[in-house]
Length: 380
Ligand code: NAI
Image 1 (spheres, protein in one colour):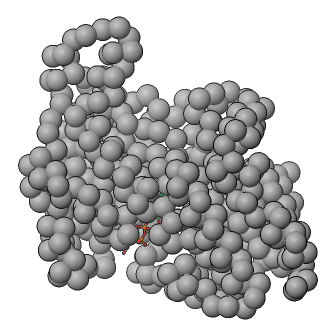
Image 2: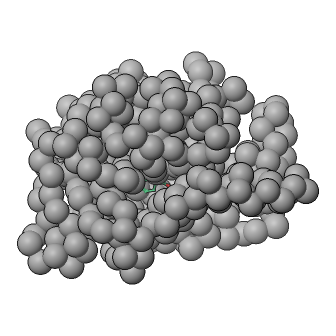
């Protein structure tokens, strides 16, 4: 057995119960602990450690797991200094900044247990020849299902209707006046990669009128045809035609703040917007203002510009003029128990390839040694 002593620092962790009681960090720790104790398939937690500890330790590797990622005294700051490998998840992102990369003298690989590596400074990783690998595809179906659900719950005005029932009220007209059918609507996706394409596939049986997409990588003609999709090269022109817009592109220099006050003016009045990609692709305040004014009829998603979102984050409570239109949840669309099994196994496969010198699956390589291997993080 090989005895190369890599230091593997895992910082991540979907605190799945955060949204139930996000008071103090102690409570968060307790809740995570309890859920993780009761449900061992919560592999993406501090407690269950992606199921990697016995395997890594049997090979002599040091394995440090923590959820402490913020501030100068955090475990991430402390342990990155001599780690060979850092594993993070997007659900509780440990930001691997340029400064941190400069301190990480031994760092060779950043692994994302999941999909989306925007929390790593990819340009700095290229310069320092640090590989950035992720478990591509591991949760794309999970997210696509969540997108379809979110579109439906906004279009059908589900949340206010359910809240009315919980309150003990029964005023059909109050909720029916803002409920529509998805059938016959135009849906556009920003990004038509693995998730965006799966969303369009899943929408077809609803009898949507047309699917549009905005992506610098055009789909092959037969793939477009299969999902009734038409590419629109200008984003303003695309959103102007859509009843529903869904965001499915990675966060990078070219997509940060892409949906801002100016672009929102070009949306159809009363359109619905779903973003499960990354919170920072949307301007937080511009979205809240558009919902409040009725320019947007609804906004839903699970990703936030800061995670965990502060208690007073405007997206928690923003509403349209009729008091609905908010479908926000914590970041969990890509961390179903099914997805956790896949990204935990995928992380292990990546590590095994690395330790044994086998090539990584090309699709998993975001940054190879000294260069971008993916085209998804902007046209470079
Ligand atoms: P992918 O790489 O298969 O597809 C991304 C597509 O976006 C590519 O076709 C690319 O050309 C396009 N794109 C990049 N920049 C663009 C821009 N500025 N405008 C329009 N299109 C652009 O990625 P996949 O698997 O579909 O994932 C997309 C993103 O979804 C991830 O990067 C991640 O941020 C997010 N995600 C969120 C999850 C969650 O739990 N909420 C879980 C998994 C992914």
